[in-house]
Image 1 (spheres, rainbow, N blue to C red):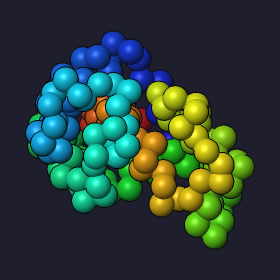
Image 2 (image 1 turned 180 degrees about the vertical axis):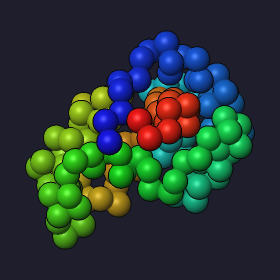
Image 3 (image 1 turned 45 degrees about the horizontal axis):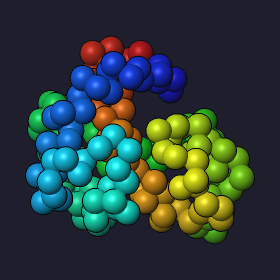
Image 4 (image 1 turned 90 degrees about the vertical axis):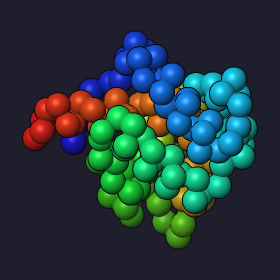
Length: 143
């Protein structure tokens, strides 16, 4: 399951539409939706909003984003037990998250991190990268 790196240009290409979708779903001003904005901490998103945003992204970009896709991709090659234990992300899982969510400022990563708190890390750029990855997957099925 090796996803090629997402380039800055690819992120910039989808950002305007992703930002519009996020602002519309959260009822906030478009100017507030920056690449770095944390959907929960900066824009006030709640877990139910993530479902709405994903649904709107699927419709807007004509891609399929399976539920839990970001966390599944973040886990990478690690088994569930290697990634988290007792609802807390392991050291290996923490290192993997920091690499996978490279767009998230390092100071937002606070150990110990509960699995349920992972969405607090998600930024607008996290969703841009997810859209780009899903577009690539749709263009290259089985790759």
